[in-house]
Amino acid sequence: MTPPAALKKISATVWELPVSYKPGMLVPARIFATEKLIREMDAGVYEQVSNVACLPGIIDYAFCMPDGHWGYGFPIGGVAAMHPETGVISPGASVSISTAACAWFLPASP
Image (cartoon, rainbow, N blue to C red):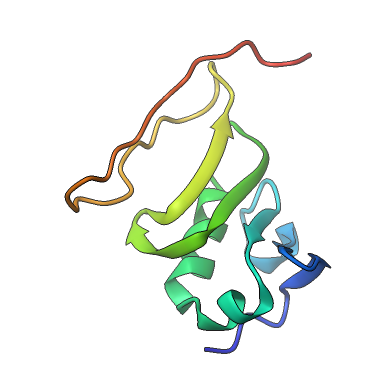
């Protein structure tokens, strides 16, 4: 699959979709992967990680790890930090066996 034209290479293993990629994105989306993995990711990964970047209360970035693949809302391998008062909790990434999600409530930096 051809990655989106807006995907920018930050380093050999860090790629970014800017907030201009999709209306409503509040933060950039960062994907950690080699160029080979980036080319092999399905379109759903880019769609879903950019959707995560639109969620209320998201902090800094929406992330997708190298194992990223199309999920159930979040991409599998997706990570996002949310503000404890204005953010949303979206633990569902998949309904497959052995998939778990966690929520940690840590103090937000000023």
